[in-house]
Image 1: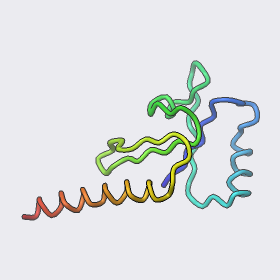
Image 2: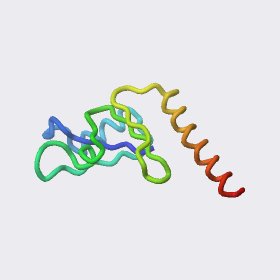
Image 3: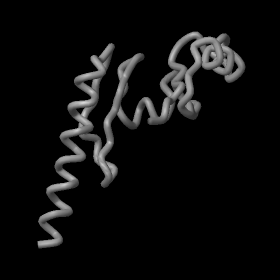
Image 4: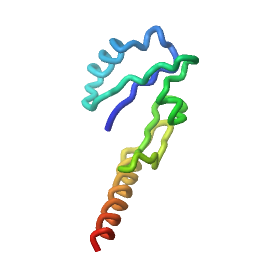
Length: 100
């Protein structure tokens, strides 16, 4: 799991230092990258590339780098777990088939 800090509004106050404080206060233990600002316009590059609409957004990417799920808004942990398990089962089935 990797977090991505995408600043698409309030650019003056959403600094890397503010992010560090937030991550510390909320004890975020996974890595969080900072999205690269776009040359033109307020929407950062990764946010544009994945058509993210805002926060929170969650993207599930499979082993081949394909986007398999895209959620906008709060997502139940069980829904995420179920989607990850489904991808793991696909991989297990593909691995078993290639060994046969």
